[in-house]
Length: 87
Image 1 (cartoon, rainbow, N blue to C red):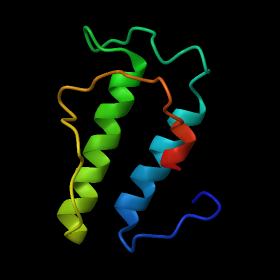
Image 2 (spheres, helix red, strand yellow):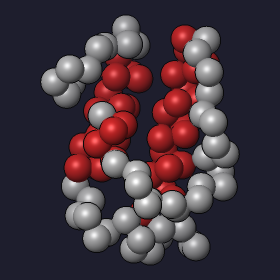
Image 3 (cartoon, rainbow, N blue to C red):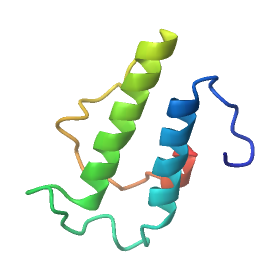
Image 4 (cartoon, rainbow, N blue to C red):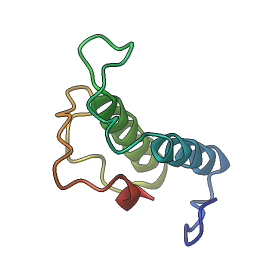
C-alpha cells in the first residue's frame, strides 16, 4: 500500500485501489487524452470510470457516499486535475 494510505479493512478493496494507483503512475503527463480500446473513450475517461467504480465499491462496503459523477459517462476533463490527489 502507498505511504500514508490507511487500510480499509477490506483486502480486495485495498488491492484494487493499489492496482489503480499503479496504473495511474504509469500514464505519462501527455497520455491522458490518448484513445483507448474502449471506443470513444480517452485514457482520462477510462481512469474516471475506474475511480468511480472504486468509490462505488467502497460505498457499498462502508456505507459512505458514492461517486459525485456518473462513472458510465466520464467527462475526460483533466484541466486542474492531479491524478496523484487520488492516492
